[in-house]
Image 1: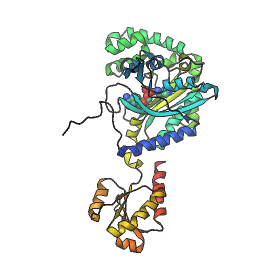
Image 2: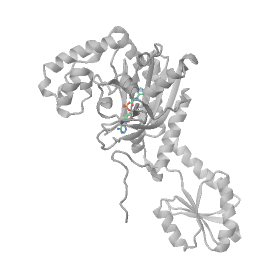
Image 3: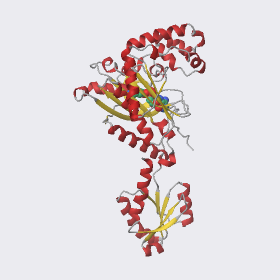
Image 4: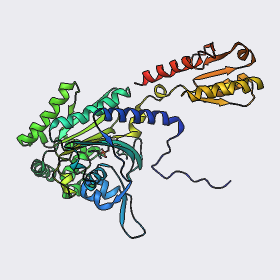
Length: 422
Ligand code: HAM
């Protein structure tokens, strides 16, 4: 046999079995975001490398180590997007969307690429659903973004998650904090890993993001941002907390949360699900980015949810819509039954049919093996009595349902499964 080609390291196929969960997350997320007034935008996967250098930051791990960079046939240096905020800001400026609305709310979904070390929950091609708000400076906007994430998780029946919040302050606070952190670091530099020492030279805040255990334990005693914040930045953070409290969303402040992208100012947040170090979502405010990329001064904030991570925590079985298959016993049942099944399909009921003449026992065995929830059986006796034999493979129960009431009956099951998902 010829040698098989496998998917490249760090990327994965999303197989039919997983698609139900992916679609459910997308539907829920899009409907929650639209409910908050967000509109969809679709931005390209390739951009000029400079876009990410100028936004995510030249000295971030993402730009330094994780970008897929290549030259096109004309010698332009392009990159596969490692995230989409930069692209959304570029599009917001390129199409002067800031002239259309005072507050612009945009959401997007799609693949991102980071050449990171693959491990559980970390891929080189992964997918995000993200949202960005342009034009709103107050803490209520940041609060609203966090509420949207919480609503998406709740609607997906995910519990046991924590929202961690911090403020990295305005550029002045950041500089002041950086100086304090540098002092702390230089007094203990031998205790830090090689990467931290490099980070400290270019962007000291990145040190707080180190995942090495020995660095983390030294950093537990590092200076705290909230003690350094100016009155305006502190007031802003309190506004976010007050907004969330008014909606009944609880957050945990994490004074060392800085995030791995340079564009943040003031609010930063991450959402973690119990027993998982990896965040399912992260975001924050980036009041200077629009201007940094050549646009008018525009406050902004946003977040992105990691699809692979959120889908991994959604209970797969719960999300599966009931799969229905039809089985025909004998030629007459097949001939007269096919139009009935097609009529149900044209009324929006999804039914897979097995047209091969096989004994009922082996048909049911296949249905069981393939995880089909319900089977509609039609033999000559049923045909004569104008009814299906309906079998629930999960409970093993069966009942006769007349041709006249089968549509209502199946729709009832589907509605009940949908309600369960909501
Ligand atoms: P981020 O924290 O880099 O933020 O990514 C957001 C989410 O994407 C993470 O919380 C995680 O769930 C998922 N993610 C990131 N890297 C990987 C990976 N290698 N494999 C699997 N999932 C991953 C951003 O990308 C910002 N653009 C978010 C934002 C929007 N901030 C403001 N607006």
